[in-house]
Amino acid sequence: MHDSVRFEKENNRLTAFLCGELDHHTAGMLRLQIDHMISLQRPKELILDFSAVPFMDSSGIGLILGRHRKMTEIGGSVFLQQMSPRIAQMVALSGIEKTIGQKEES
Amino acid sequence: MAKTKPINRMRCSLPAISINEQTARLLLSAFLMQADPTAEELADLKTAVSEAVTNAIVHGYPDSGGQIFITATLYEDRLFRVQIRDTGCGIEDIPLAMTPLYTTSPEEERAGLGFAVMEAFCDRIRVSSRTGKGTTVTLEKRLTSKQEPGKTR
Image 1 (cartoon, rainbow over the protein chains, first blue to last red):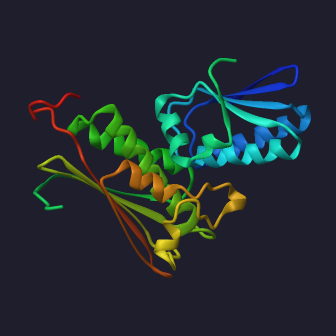
Image 2: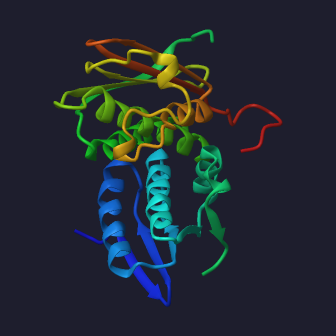
């Protein structure tokens, strides 16, 4: 099976490049992989990159919120980057952009 | 919304397993091709249907599996209607279930936004449910028409 997420670590920043459609089915797997990486690396910043995510429903919001909680527990924070207008619309609809930052470029 | 004549209909049933969230989206896209929707309309409907199917899988059949029945209909006046039905546990309190951010599955990291998303991306939503019998979600959206003068796509 192809990888649904690829990681890059630079100093205290962990970037997760999500790949593929993000729904309830794929969110479960992504959650396990990202959380495993968070506990190994204990970064200060977790960046979720959406450049290779062609579709996302509200399961993606659940995934973002869950990682936000996880990062807050270890004193870190979550940022979102490279969202398509469509994904940005979903994020805006959920109201989470008030608590979660967005990055233009890494 | 006044109904006109249906011009095409798709009925399908899928086992309530999460891989079929994607299957449902693909079937919907395939059926909608004949109506030549805008990219935006197609994305709206894919998202809304994905939410409804996920709800059926996660909440309709929380313990045992079951079937999800999807009926998609295209009407003469470019009204598109899709019904997502399960014969699962049903919803006790529909207004509560439709409240944004309300979820019965926080441990599953459900954001509680399913119905809010369906409402945002469709013209109309109807939910009927009976405890122990199942739930039917009906979504409607009128697709823009290429023929209408003055409208840009």
